Amino acid sequence: MTYRRFAVTLVALTLLLVLLALACLVFGSVDIPAGNILDILTGNGSGNKAWDIIILQSRIPMIATAALAGAALSISGLLLQTTFNNPLAGPSILGVSSGAGLGVAIVILALGGSLGGLFGESVGSYMAILLGALMGAGVVLVVLIAFSAIVRSNTMLLIIGILVSYLTSSVVQLLNSVATEEGVHNYVSWGFGNFSGVSVAQMPVYAGIIILALVGSALMVKPLNAMLLGTRYARNLGINVSRTRNMLLLITGVLTAVVTAFCGPIGFIGLVVPHIARMSLGTSNHARLVPATILAGADIALLCALVSVNNPHGIIPINAITPIIGVPIILYIILNRRRIQYFN
Amino acid sequence: MNENAIFVTHDLAVGYRNGKNVVTLLEGLNLTLEKGKLVALLGQNGAGKSTLLRALTCDERPLSGSIQVNGKNLLEMSQKERSRLIGLVSTERIQAGALTVTELVGLGRQPHTGFLGRMDDEDREIVRQAMADAGIIGKADEYIASLSDGERQKAMIARALAQQTPIIILDEPTAFLDVASRIETMRLLQTLAHDRGKAVLLSSHDISQSLMLADELWLITTDRQVVTGSTRQLVADGAMDHLFDNRSIHFNPQILDYSF
Image: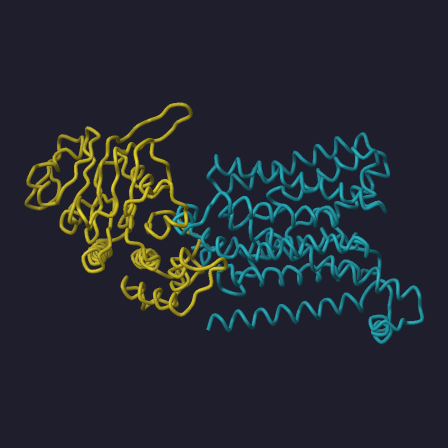
């Protein structure tokens, strides 16, 4: 019975993914007839150079970027929620995204350029930026581990995450004060969140790292389930808890850092999607949660991307859309926590 | 040497490290668990029951001494090896409300399954048997969230059974239960020891239940000694009078409990 629910949910999420990807392909700021899109996809070309470029170098990379970013952030959220035994954990609320953002800002300044203008043409420069994001996310995760050993309260850890975010954004602002006006402008627009920042040339690195880390998370299903029982039971089940926790946080850090470096600090997706997966499947079993979280995350991000590019007055920032989807869901969860099994 | 002895400590000292200070709670412990026996660990609050159990399950390193299980040093084993010898039931809050009883008990198979934790038919049969033995099989497909405290405890005991360890250690297994569930749980543990040959150690505040059902007692006395022996012998020797500091209560052997 529960297996059927799992299968149905997975099929529905996959269908939705296909539909949303098609919608992102067809609808955009420029009207391109569906027939011509088909011609472009089959390699025949539409006869309109601009249309070819829009589909092949803008819409398809955006679809891939958004789907992978959504999956990556959602898995980050799931791993953080299980690791810290905290249903309201997520990469942005715990400050991991802002740590990555700070890393990005520091690297750009250290490279002698202005803030923003994020990805120059050279591979070296965006690799350095990625590294900066990884270091930033890593530092925040280490801080969180240290504090989680001292403060046992879930709420306190969330507050520490929020404080970390404030601290990093103040450092970024201090950096901004010595940066050029153009750099500041670029940094601010990066902060809005955007799925159009990954070029075709950068896609292999972006997609490769994310897919590798997602596969890594799927391999952690067994220890993740043991962690549901808390560290003492997990140890009793033969799990090396500290090694597992480090591995989970490494995967989280990589996923959040890559997405943040390329797309900006995107909120709410990582926090909300694991709950959508748990509620639609009715289980905390990670063998089922991981695939459903990946698919639902990709779906939500594609939905955001679709809304973002289909505004006649210009692109809507992703971070203006995610709270509109995320906040009602979080409020629903908080208000209904007594009725939701996984809180009890 | 007793051939039923499966778990033996030598000169064990337990306590905690507080910065540079080492606080020793209990020392010189030579304790033995035997197959087929139910042992109750009793002592007043703060006497060191939980600390001792955490050392015995290797959740905390003992300050000194050794623990041998089947003649092998428990402290030098890998986490995985230990997980096949000792099953634990603690009072830790778990996050597993949205697992079914079958899924929760299935986690007990983790020490025996492969990298991804997939179960085969034999594993599933062991899980089913564990639920039957613990008397929770009627709720096999229910969410943990929907269970009463007593049923939850049975599910956790079934999980430890599915682990198929020769030793089961329980930290206050009856702490949050009503009287009926307490008696049921204790009887279940007694059955596991007597009929399944498990070595079962539990800590408890429930003196009369423990004295009625446990084969042996480990008493942490007020002068920080651990007195061990058969329940009958210890009661007859008056060892129960050294369990609590409070002079206004006395052990009454007629009712197997304390009275004013």
